[in-house]
Structure formats: structure tokens, C-alpha cells
Length: 457
Image (cartoon, rainbow, N blue to C red; front, side, top):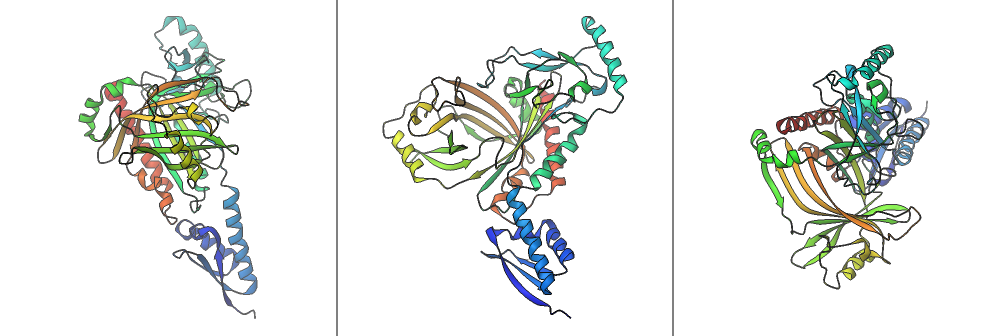
């Protein structure tokens, strides 16, 4: 009979909560598969696992623990997921409706798409005589396709698939390692605006056609961007305040020095320096450095765009994370050196891309100039004005932009106050969020945003 012994092993990189699993699920699985009893001590500076069993049982348990750690490292690079859902305005039957792409003629605040022809989605009014013939043909087509819409592989889906969309996001989010020793920040937001489309090849379509569109290369490729323009809400904020009992929590006026983001490339990575103004010292200082500020790489960046197809605004649900790294003394010295001569505002910006020539491969500047935050017991509504400078003629091979453009972006966002627990997940390695509960709060917040839109539209 084999002897039963106890063995203690170190768990690297504070990954005790990872080995424990949600509700102890991973420890239970390791125990069942190996036959050894496993107890994880994650409340110390160095996490340890006590393994009790025969030699073979302990060996199997250690293999399973090492496998978990290895897999957590390999899946830190998470692919981008983006969905564009049609039919978020629930006042009509999506399956019976026809839509068209209408040319967008407004001002585009996105410098990367300003020279492209853009369209927005509009539901076709059945009373419009000139569209009736095409509409009848297309509706017949829809009936021939049947009631079941095809599964989309290109990210274009319909509102009835929203829950499935969230499940995919949560599945990917759960694979992110919550015990990563690098500071990680998760942010959730819902924005109002209008979804714009480029590469449009089919001017009228139904929900079946919509599901065949794709962002991938091919004949059905249609790209999207989100336009943060919706003055109806900002102009009627007092009405919204009164109806939803929102109180002004914070206000930053034009001229106040708030925060600046400096985007740059370093070692083929996209980075961001976050600057804040220190009044007593009368200087800008770096308060954060974040890496991989893009939609690929070692971060989570999930976009779900909700397209109404009507006069109701479209919405963007954004879930993103970024990793903080140590502030380098060279970066501190660089920011101080730029301020060695008195800074003056230029087109409303305190820092410009040209300030970093020869010092940093700067790719953009964003500066918050105005901000108002309203909240009730459950939700927060933020109106923000940002000045941004980005290159307008910079090719991928160029290191220094020869021309830049300063634009203004107005954003209106909604948050659920309960999201703060998720956003602070990096503050405690033992903190896990409940996917079902989070999904419920996302639906509640989207419904609240809908009610805001209905109030002013």
C-alpha cells in the first residue's frame, strides 16, 4: 500500500486564486482528477499549495496545477471581438422590415475616416411609393429564406442574438488572468451616437442580408465607425435630470486643466502616457503609463454596436482593459523638459504632437476640456468634450507626421454604478465578477439609455 504524504509547493506570480477557481471549481477538479487533496493558501505574500496523497496522486495534481498556470499565460493574448447588432429600436418587427444605407453628410470627427464615403442605416418607410416595388421583391426574398436568420461569422447580427453575444464576450473575458501581477484596469461604458458604414455595396437590405455582411476581407466586407454626435441629449439634459432624478456630481469647465493622454509607439507596442495638472507645483506630470492601447494584443477590447435603424440614436457598449506599467524616469524627464519653456495653449491644446519630435514617436493627443457627471442611485450620465490631435497623412512607414489636425469630440456616456466593482477587479486578486449578474446590469443600463433617448427624440 502506497504511503500518503503531504507536500507543499510554491505557486508563482500570486496565482493562488487562479488555482482555486471560481467557487473552488479548479481545486475541486484537480482533486477529482488526481485523487490528491489540494489546499491553496492565497492569503500570504507567497502563494502555496498543500498537496496530500500518494506519490502518483501528488505528481498528477502538480501536473494539473502547472497546466493551469501555463494555459493562463498562453491565453493572455485575447482576440478582438466586435459585434454590430441591428434592431435595437424595438418599435417594429425586424424580420418584416427593409433597410437602406443613406449617405452621411455631417462632419466626421474621426480623422482616420474623413475622406471616406460613409452611410448610416435607415428603416424604409412602407408608405414611400418609390421604394414599394423593390420592397415587395425583397420581402418575398426574406420569406423564401424562412424565419430563421443565418448565423453570422462576420460580426453582423440582430438584436435577438444580444444574449448570445454577451455570452461570447464573458467566455473570452473569463479567460483573462485576473491574477496578473501587472496593474490591469477594466472599463465599461455605453455611448450614444450614430453607427457609420464604409465599403457599402448593397444599398437596400433586410435582416437576412445584414447577417451576411462581414468585416473580414472579401466581397461582403463593410467597415464601421462610431460617430459621437447627438446634440438632442446634451441640449435637453435638464429635462433628463428631472425625469430620472439625476444630480450634478462633478463639473469641469472650459479652461480648467484636467487630463491629457499622449499616444505613442514604443518597441512596436502602442502606449499611452496619462498626464494630470498639479496646481501647487504648476506643472503637468505623468500619473499613468498603459501599454497595448489597441484592439489587439494583451488586452480585452470588446465593442458591441447597437443600430436602431430609426431616428433613435445608435449605442456603443464598450468593454476594454489596459495594463499599467512602471513610469520610466526618462519619460518624467521628457515631460519636464517640454515644460522648461512656458507652455501656451495652441488650438486649445497644452501639448502638441510636434512637442515630442525627436523625443517620442507620438501618434496622437487627447485632452479633456469640459466634463459634466450626473448620477442617481443606480446610473451615471457623463457629457464630455475632448480636443484631439492626430496625423491626417501619416503612412504606416512614416515615423513623423507632416500634417496633423485638431478636432473636437463630444461624447455622452451611461454607466451602471455597480460596474465599479468590476472595474476595480485589479485591486484584489481574490475578486471575481458574476457573469450572469454583470449581464443583467448591462441589459438594465441599455434599457435606461433607451429611456433617455425616448425622452428627447
